Image (tube, rainbow, N blue to C red; front, side):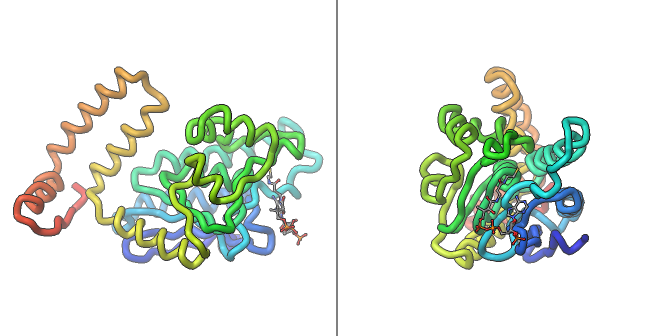
Length: 260
Ligand code: COA
């Protein structure tokens, strides 16, 4: 099952590709397990400084959970499945290095949810986003009802989840669900790699702390988060990278960060 998800590293960027194109990259337990271990592998490799999550082919990023696993399941037997998917999404979101979803087609259900767990979403013009679970008599379970309203606002999220209607890439851009739309899948892959290469060169400690402080906005009170920001801002002043970044600026040269 290992090749249902592919892993490669290029220029300090890990590329994780869901590889079930004939099933529109539908997600099953093996895919979720492989994704989990590849994200872990990326985080543990000091040479990897950014991750791209994408789908194989030009049709789908991931068309959601594999529906063939649903018949006959009840609340008890579905729980480990949904818990695993949500754990993977949570793991992606908490990763200490930047993550970009390169959405190359349908991102439905769990596909949309995994994309939302990434820091940044780029898409090709043929991408379609949606949470169609309602049409199966179920609801999103990999964090969709939680992350979607945080990204696009409660009213828009309710329309998407309650109607199950998919939206096109330009609409996803308009509502802030994606950061950028490219004309073709090839342009998307190039544009995503360019951003990932840029992010991979940034100082790792500052990246990790900035991500944490940004995410805290969803978890802490305003007062606590502002106080946390002061703490981690101060921490960055103990890093070698801060000396390097400041020295590089003052001496009009490019910084070379060591991520410490
Ligand atoms: N689970 C299992 N198989 C899926 C799937 C899913 N979520 N999404 C697509 N597939 C499979 C189809 O069954 C089909 O397989 P087959 O060729 O063996 O019949 C193949 O992928 C292509 O899908 P198809 O429906 O023929 O393509 P399409 O272009 O007409 O439609 C979609 C594409 C994505 C709109 C449609 O497949 C769809 O609605 N998928 C389900 C989306 C969903 O509800 N996701 C949430 C699940 S909780």
